[in-house]
Picture 1 (cartoon, rainbow, N blue to C red):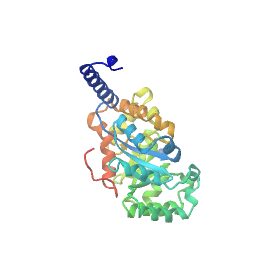
Picture 2 (spheres, helix red, strand yellow):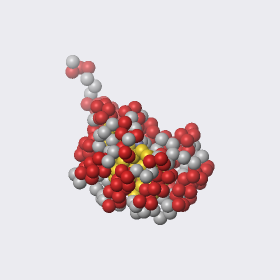
Picture 3 (cartoon, rainbow, N blue to C red):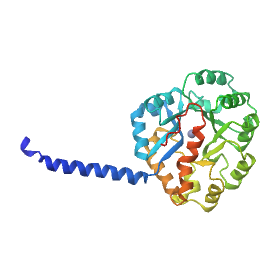
Picture 4 (tube, helix red, strand yellow):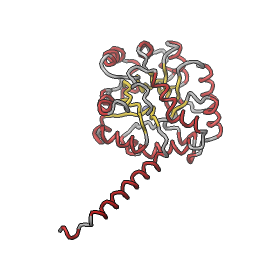
Length: 292
Ligand SMILES: [Zn+2]
């Protein structure tokens, strides 16, 4: 029924209004400040629920320009990378299923397989690797550390301070991303590790600890002091560790924006973007440091 259609001019006004609304919504959600998400995952379950285009749409809505992705299995990260090579930074996951989290360090086949995979993909790092003090002497860990060191790859570690010490003892120049503020997220303990490894390539992500360091979105003074004392060490991350977390991706990114909002602009930009950019710019296969 053509008679019931609105005149063209009205359509145009409506369309312009909708576009304005959409832009306002994005600006409101992201406050115009860019984020690199230094730690997220893409699993088989995630891939069934969200195809690469839907992942990219989530990054866009959250104002996330680049994201480190570890796949389970590994190649899922390359599937995302193929769709948006400038935005997806693939880290080589060594787990076929979440069960490998607890046993990879005893599996002698892991380093060989990793070496073969590294020869073929555009990997920028290895991990996330879960590992704690009792397994610090694992020869499998040592081989992966040497592999990362030799190939300029970042090692993403989920472990305690003993593991960080061990990794730098094996390879003092290796690049390390320590997940979740470590396993003892306490400012004094972290400051001690940072001071012990002054001059080393150590970055520490705050993922999943946002409510701990910033209850109700307000950064606690002792954490603010730590970030200000070591402005080049810390970086934010969403850690999309489940499909549900991917559904809440924008919400988590918004919470990160909230607790960083009161920091001096330079420090905030380092946490949200600059430190991750610096970490990734030296890594193999990472995109050249285009300014996004
Ligand atoms: Zn993780």
